[in-house]
Length: 149
Ligand code: SME
Image (cartoon, rainbow, N blue to C red; front, side, top):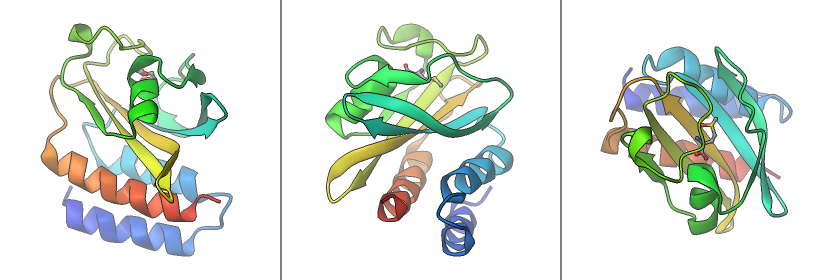
């Protein structure tokens, strides 16, 4: 998948979707068009927790509510910085969701500089997320930040 094409498509999705569907539509698009994105979800900050919002993948996760500061997701929410875990077996913070997952990326979504959510993507391929995924997903997160009330 070409990242520039994907960015343009996400812009169109944001423009055309109803507010209620926008996060789900973006999640669905990322899941369906990137072969190595095995599970895609968006967590939203509610107080001291991350609460799972829209997601797409073969299985549901039991981690639907994660304290800020816990796991890879909670770390990214606390620091406001993108986390790339090349090998989940080697990261002590990792909270396992699926037995097949080998790498993970978590990108904070900010509104006016405050973390309001995050994009969480698991892959069944080890060390699959590169700088192009980081740049692309940070752009998507910026766009989503503008759309989250
Ligand atoms: N692995 C995450 C938990 C969320 S699941 O990947 C969907 C973590 O360590 O925070």
